[in-house]
Amino acid sequence: MNPAHLHLLLNHFPVVGTVLGIFLLIMNFIFPSRSLHKTTCYFFVLVAVFSVVAYLSGEPAKEKLLNSVEISDKFISNHETLAFYAMLMTIFIGIVALAISILKIRSPLATATLLVLCLINTYLLVVTGNLGGEIRHIEIRNTPGLENAYPTEEQE
Image 1 (cartoon, helix red, strand yellow):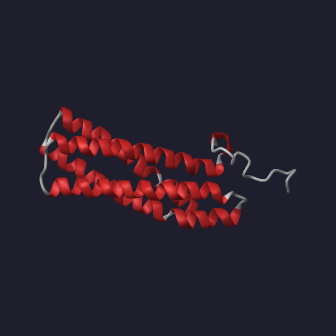
Image 2 (cartoon, one colour):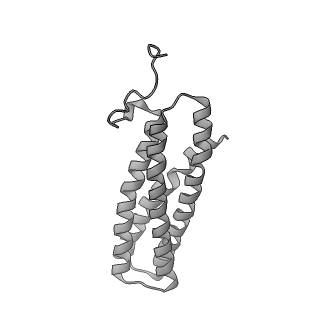
Image 3 (cartoon, helix red, strand yellow):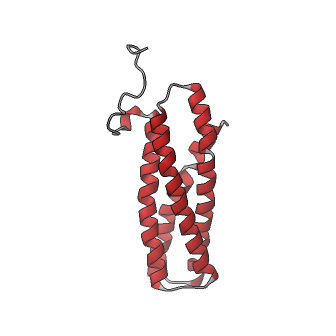
């Protein structure tokens, strides 16, 4: 397994984890229980840890990719920048969830706050993932001015 493969494997955990966390938060509204609340909070801490690992695996993946194929650095740079902010947001959610759990705050306001943060973060993570996909998948690109970032046979 090379660094690019590891990054591709790990980067799904924050996205899927945040969506599953949203489901758990909704379940907390419908079926409030202490154990579900605590599980949900610690789940977000776990998602934050995976977010850091996914982000850190990006740099070796970038080096592997830049050394092996002709890729426009603009795609990688856009993905890397937004990934940093998505990671920070995921860490923030993990810290808030941990604080809520440690302080034993079980109010609907706390759950709603986490839910809003997660919805915002889901958007960040989805856009980050799409930008990551644009690095290699020309069929999904819609970044203005970068549609033809790969050299064609005519340009070489």
